[in-house]
Length: 172
Image (cartoon, rainbow, N blue to C red; front, top):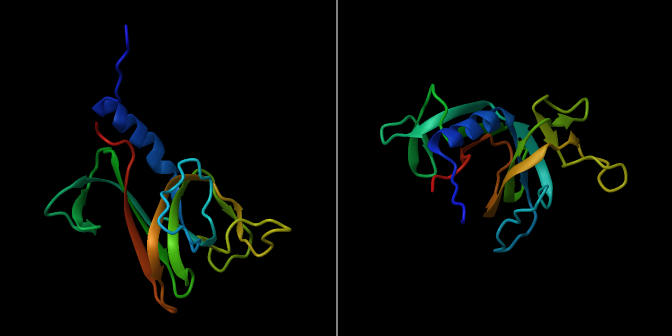
């Protein structure tokens, strides 16, 4: 007899509660992906230029009167777990200057080289003594969500807030 299974609504919330505290960092990069879809087996960005720790992380619900506007939709914070997680990140001045074509949300322990310009920021990707000696990321964590972008030029001396909604497990 064939089996049919699904994540229940409560099961989705269990997963979201477990995953949300792990979603900690956003990395942006300049690799020329063209129009290729993100590779589900990817473990890193193609060419990471900067990474920051979140400054706000909340469970949210869709709400036409909500105060959080992301990608044309509105959301309100929720005191209860939901499958939607709002993340906000901030790059200051020229921290992520370049033509962004990729970004990734990372989970798990992420560590930086000592002496970065501020504790929540790292530049130049993952450190490797031979291949990338200027990299400031010691442990990148795990790539949770990878997005390919139409190339977007960032301007110098501009503070950039990046807001994302991460849907932990889609409803059927």
